[in-house]
Length: 98
Image (cartoon, rainbow, N blue to C red; front, top):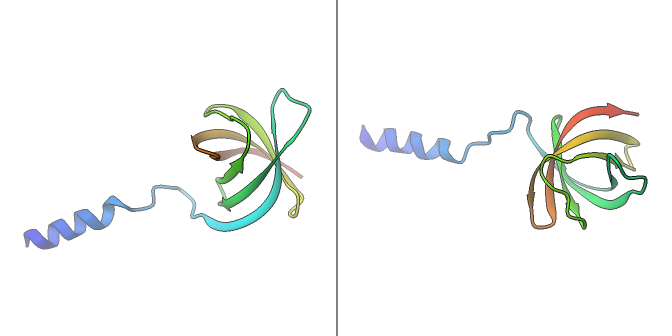
């Protein structure tokens, strides 16, 4: 009985907490701060209905508002930077324009 309860506890610890499932992609993209006129290159590494993980070269910080353009899909979206880890940032989509 205790073993079953511990198994159930362990199996939920690593559970996905995201609202939308991610799917891995590799897409060339551009990223621009809300107040900037120039766009930096980045790579979309995975994407979901609610956001994406990007490989970036600049120092984007959590809380920043950025515009991401995924070239191949001809999509532009306003995003909020949610986290940063090394050269990767996680962004949440806050508005989309085509």
